[in-house]
Image 1 (cartoon, rainbow over the protein chains, first blue to last red):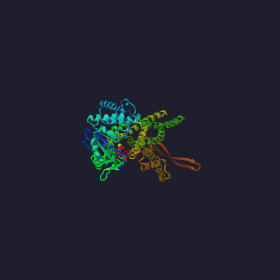
Image 2 (image 1 turned 30 degrees about the horizontal axis):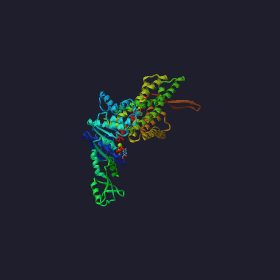
Image 3 (image 1 turned 45 degrees about the horizontal axis):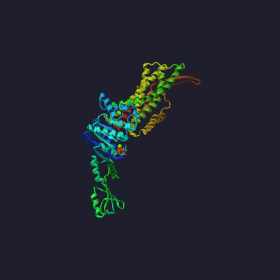
Image 4 (image 1 turned 120 degrees about the vertical axis):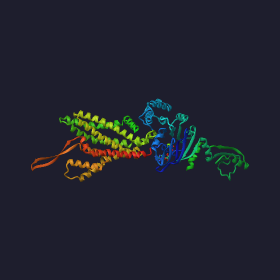
Length: 310
Length: 301
Ligand SMILES: Nc1ncnc2c1ncn2[C@@H]1O[C@H](COP(=O)(O)OP(=O)(O)OP(=O)(O)O)[C@@H](O)[C@H]1O
Ligand SMILES: [Mg+2]
């Protein structure tokens, strides 16, 4: 079953087309990394799926039920879906005058979690995010990282089937990030679905099984990390560093060649052209002193997708 | 609806808003009670009715000003502030609908005001007892009714503030607009309406007639202002009795009419000016409805 499904979603803020026909699907049990540069529309998409902003058109389904269509949310379906969803917003504060315990307690109130179970659950969560020792301290006195961890805890209060997190790792120190990844893995083990956004590949690469890349409001790439890399290689191409014993001519080929020195070249080509380069050099009676292939990192994939747009 | 309501109550108690409102009300009572004490102390006797008349005069004017500002500012920064801080996105990602949240929030804030008003009533009664007024049933009900009317002023300003809060994204600018708007409807418009009234009033109008005329003008032209409506209502706590008086002058007898006010109580005023009380209700509902319609469709970011 698709836990989250977005179909040709469009959102226009005054003059900005933040979502331009976004479509994606998150299946049950997936850990889906929603990647994109700043301003790509990640938060817009997430807010739209939760009914926190109104998309202009398109369709949204949550946990198999359609919640948005023809510019309208179905209030009933949305409420039902929200009872099984956990959401962690991007830069939000919680109530300064409450303690973490009180915060989780009052939020738990909206779901019908029985009193007896509630205390246990809150304790578990605060321990998971390392806030149990400060459970009676006012949130107003918390550091950014502590607030971020409380935000994560509140997203888990109803033991959600689908966890939607917007830039969950921003503001966390390396230890916090490691702990966060642990939480994600726990969720995966428990069979839950996680959808989280980030603009940092390294954050996504380790924990996600599926990645979608959004640029300017459209999904540009989707698949598992390996697939994406392969796909991308086709697109972004290979970069070959070549050194020969004497100058060679590249006339007649359609690769992008940059002469670094009389006998050193940087060649960009759409695929693996090592063979062809070999043939060309030998064919001109020269010798290859060095041939290096640089496979682009995901970071570069990303940047090239962004650049492609400009 | 319960959820937003409970949160607002918690906020009201924990964030000292209630106490700020209360403090303002109590500060207003101190000079009044002091004045009353002066009046009774200097050998003059003060009847419960006279004391009430003084309290009403002082307290409605002053407290409408302060409480009105508190209410409109609270309203004007209620929704947009939560959007800025992001709490609303956390809340509405839970199993809570927008409609129930905003209605709960509004009722919660209203109940906080109500609590403050009840405490103010208690203090007012204690103050009256202190200056030596018999706390008869009439006095108690008058103080209570007066404060209920003040409560309605707050609710209407709160609702008006909600409109600003849902239409202006920045809580800072909403606060500024709220203050300007408050001064316009509290001060500026009444001045124009009164000017208009005086230019149309007959020259020989009696005090009672002038009051009736003002009530007509305020009801017709400032129906959207809670303070104007309450001004009308409270002007009817006393009624005027016209008495013809004749005095001897060197040039012979001269007769003139004198208006003598008699205190009839707040209940009487409310019964006479039920239209204005109704306007308080209707306009609060209209303001709130507009804010709610906007809120359920707005982007919360
Ligand atoms: N309230 C708003 N009014 C107008 N434009 C907006 C508003 N909110 C966002 N935008 C624009 O919409 C686009 C998408 O923004 P969004 O916040 O969804 O991006 P994002 O991918 O989450 O970026 P980031 O990584 O910085 O969080 C941006 O161009 C942004 O400027
Ligand atoms: Mg974002």
